[in-house]
Amino acid sequence: MGSEGDALIVENGKKTITPILSKLTENFDLERSEIYSVIDAISAGQLSDVQIAGFLVGLLSKGPSIKEVAYIAQAMRNNCVPLKVAVEGDLTDTCGTGGGLTTFNVSSANAVLAAAAGIPVAKHGSRSISSPSGSADVLEALGVVIDLQPEQAARLIETVGISFIYAPNFHPVMLKVFGPENQLGVKTIFFTIIGPLINPAGARNHTIGVYRPELVNMMAGVVAEMDFNHVIIAHGLDGLDEISLIGKTSIAEITNGAIKYYEVVPEDFGLKRCTIRDIAGGSPEFNAGVIRDIFSGAEKGPRRDFLLLNNAATLYVSGKATSIREGIDLSRSLIDSGAAMRKLDELIEASKSV
Image 1 (cartoon, rainbow, N blue to C red):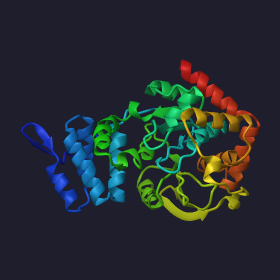
Image 2: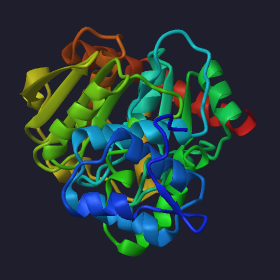
Image 3: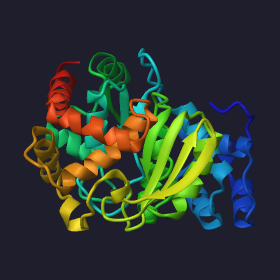
Image 4: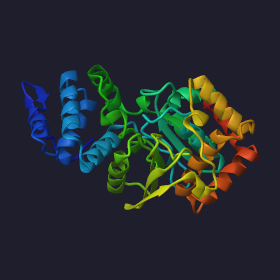
């Protein structure tokens, strides 16, 4: 729980957020104590759906500051069901914001490929909100049991090197915010930019795809305020929420709080450009088939290259490669050797009996 004191007022035995809503409507940023109080109250069931909706709309209308997003993310971490994992080194995650052009769930394939490289992976995610297939959907279509309790997920990471962390099982605040947000019919930060920041296992290395170019700067600022080690935030300027194989990608790289901005194109890594049609996704079953084809060696075209590029960035932030370029060679060898398919099959079987 937040330790900054309760900034909410109690009237007739119930909490009111009127002073906080007033600040938001007057375009004032909220303090840490105010953010913590709201998130704590949502978690404890002390706010009505109308109050939650008011907070969501007020924050959206004002526009959340970098510090406000960092405060919300930290408060969400404080209120989540903790996942304690006994592994050497930092955990890695590949959870992005979603919301970009529809591809074949490359971040989920990326997570499995990273685990095949010996990286401990806590793949945070949920079912799709904005596309035909979210990370939970495609992994389930592959045969992975996703609805795991904390001790089961921890055991999978410790024994197999990877587990899916199904967000609804770990974040009570998300469950309480979902209804009001769904009824409002607008997308707020809780189901976009907050998700990648609140991994219950505390993953400190991360590749985060974002769905709008302006989110690269915002997310970089938030990550720099929080306890991360090495993070790459990427937006394909063609609309992809990944490192793009279509054209130019805007990247923010954060290393222990220091931010570096740059742009890359596929040719920088010896890869050929493609079209969105070449890497498009579909249903969970379709996307699962694409991932299996890549891992089995049946698919050697743009879809494979798209995965290689994004996995290379994950290998880089996790310390398995000294650069993205070097990471591509390692990623390619993990597929060609069969290690990727073996890791996927191992995850599927272990998730059924953990």
